[in-house]
Structures are given as structure tokens and as C-alpha cells.
Image 1: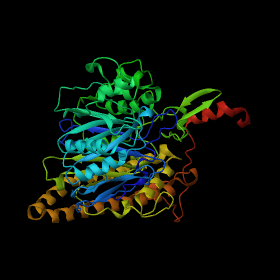
Image 2: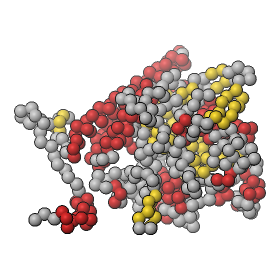
Image 3: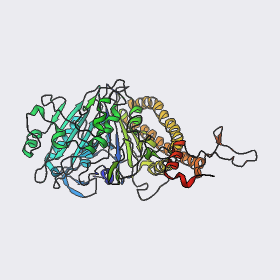
Length: 546
């Protein structure tokens, strides 16, 4: 099997020593909670070592007896071989041709339950299941059967598994050395609800009698009893308490991101102290009912969150600096005079390889219904371009091999978006306004265009599904390429406008010149009063003017 980015999990799995992974964020919207009846999910592949590209597997048939090499996504380490199935489906990114989408976040959990003899790591589970599944339920069965047959290699993982009709959260953790398989539970998110997970196990109550909306391994409770993680009646069992108990970092850096999403659509004020690290408070529910219907744009914007308007607002604390930057360079923890401190971990973070919002629509043929809204780098300074899941090719700007993390390429979307973002970090409060203008221009245009593209594709589909796929491939690839070209123009504009701390004057959409054709004198915006006061406070005596 072709690798889907060796680095895909290279910082999804950030657990070191006793700390949990603090990487990816997944948001979920049921079809009755969305504006148009879509099932919508999201995923940020946050990593310090991931090069953001889009991978694709074409549908294929395989000879009887064929074997599949399984390679760990984190390291490229060969883990073993498993039997290949006769037929596999096409996959683009994290969605397949049947509108099945799978994403993840690593919660780590109890370290003693990692089985280094297993074959199936979490990344391989995702991309093998996408190639073998026609529905979310089938994907759950494929993933859990693979683990049972071949062993589970990774630590604790939360998966979002969705299709055009429903969405599930599945949480899984191994049984430790010498115990093949995993314990797991999958809960269907009600259609009129939203959910999320972000590197902390979230499933507490398990409705064991609800076979339609809950699936689980037979030994999920008995194994916890055997290991001493749980005592009591089955009805009181909590997956979180048994396999990934709350700790301060699991709340403040992980559950807080879930809260940041929920609070946009319902009142979550009662849980604020909980997500700020107080595990004695009532935990958040697995899912909530929003007070209004949610759009793809809402989910995209939620992926840009930095706790704005909350007590953890990253712009409103001193670390944001003179230009109100909502980012903090790693590490997340630091010590001053013996006191430990932290930086907030928001949904939007600078070290993102790619970010997606899969949209599944059950009223359209699968070739047309699935749209993978795809962006590279941080969602906050990226553009989500629509890529239909039936596409026959990957845009050149997203192609594997077009540059890498150590090789810059002017035709790579990853490098163009990072170039713009890294400029913005140095003058964020100014540049983000220009970035938002172009970002909105592009994304609003795509959303306005999709109904016409859908209609044209349906007309072609009635004559030839393959012709419809070729049309959607053309639209997906040209849209991504034009967005990257437009972002390069934006980068050039920002460099000219803000060079050396000045701000060029503009007039009628052009940089202003004097009556003789030379550049007009720029503005000198300096800093705001708050920053000047901080300078005076720290070193004012040396800077006093006479």
C-alpha cells in the first residue's frame, strides 16, 4: 500500500514522558444539525514534521492471495503484512468514493497498554478502512476486525467515522504486550447534535443495550476490572475513567478545544472551570444540541479558533505581543523563578500540515455528494478549496513530491501558505485583515459556485458517471491551483505593503505614488499604547526623553 504521508502522525503522537498528545482536533455535525442536511466533520493534522499534501489511492482489484505491507505512519517502520482484499475503493485525502470519511486524535491513555508487537497502527487503520468500506458502520467493523486479527500497535486513539447518513466516535486502546487486539467503544452521534474530540478520551456512559447506536468490544468492562482500572456495576462504567483518566493537561489543552467549539452554538459556561483544569467539576457531555443549524463555513471558521472572547483568549494576554499574535512557539510549558506556566493550546495552531472539512451529502450520487474541503497549514491563514471525493487526480499544488518539508517550492500550496502565515506572525494585527479579505473572497466564491457545479455534474452523470468525474476533477484541480496562485499574489502584496515596519498608502486598489510617479511616503503606525506602556514599565528610565 502506498504510504499516506509517513509524517501524518509525526506529531499527532506527541506523548512524551507523562504528557498526553496535544495535536489534532476533530469536529462533528450531524445531518439534522447542519444547514443543508450534510454530515460534516473536520480534522487538523497538526504536526511539526508533516508536509501538507493530498494523497490519493485509485480503486483497484487485487489477485487472490495478495498481501499488503503495513507501515507505521509515524516513522515508516515496517510492522508486518496482512491479506489484501479482492477490491479496494478510491480514496482522496480522508474520504473515499462512497462518502466515507475517517479522522482521528490521539489521546494516549495508559502507557502500559501499548503493544509493540501489534501490526495495525492507527494511521494504517484509517486508510485501509477507507479503501475497504462503503459505510461508517462497515468501516468500524473493518477497523476492529483488523485489530483483532493482527494486533493494535498504537496508543489510545479517538476516531471520527462518518458517511452521508451518520457520524460516530470510536475510542480504542490496546491491551498491552502479549495481548493481541484492543478494547474499544463506538457511539453514534445523534443526527441533531454536534460533537468533537481533541486528544482526550471523551466517552463516559456506554448504552450497552442500544445495539443500533452503540458498538463495543465484548471485554471492554471485564478487561478494565482485570487490570484494576474499574470496580463496580457495568452501568457505572466509564471508558474515560478506566482508560484515560482526566489530568490537568487533558482538560486545559484538549477538552478546552471541544468546549471552544461547543460554546459557539450553545451555552457552555457551566463547564469553563472544568476545561481550565478542574477535574472535580462536572465533565462535558459527549455531544450537545446546537441552538441553530450549522454550515460548512461555520465549521471552517471553528477550525480557526484561538479562544476569542473567552478567559483563555490568546490575543488578550501579554504573550500576544505588540501585534496581538494568537500563537505561541513551542514548548507549551515554561518555568520562571521556579513557577510553572503554560501557553494555551487552541484549535488553530501554527504547526499544521493540512486541515480538512469533509462534507457528505446523501441526496446526491456518491460521485457528486462528497466534498473534501482541503487546506494546507493552519486553518486560520489557509483557504479551504473544494475537492470532490470522486476526483481522478490530485492538484499539482497539493501533489506529493512537489517540494517537501526541507525543500521549498513556489508551486507547492504548503509553502505558499506558510510563506504568507510566517510573514503575518510578525505583524499579525495588520496583516490578518488583508488575509481575511482574500480568504473570504475565495471561500465565499467557492460556496456560491458549488450549486452550479453540482447541477452540471448531475447532468453529465445521467449520460456518463465517468464524464461527471472528469468534470469534477477539472473543477477541483483548477480551483486549488488558482487559489494557490492568488495566495502567492497576496504574499507579494503583503511584503510590499508592510516592508520594514512601514505601511504603504493605497488609493483605488493600488499603492499610491506622488505626483511625479515615485512611491508616496508611507505611514509609520508604530505600536499601540498598551505596548508603549509595557516598554516604559520594563525599561522606561533608560528611554526617557529630555
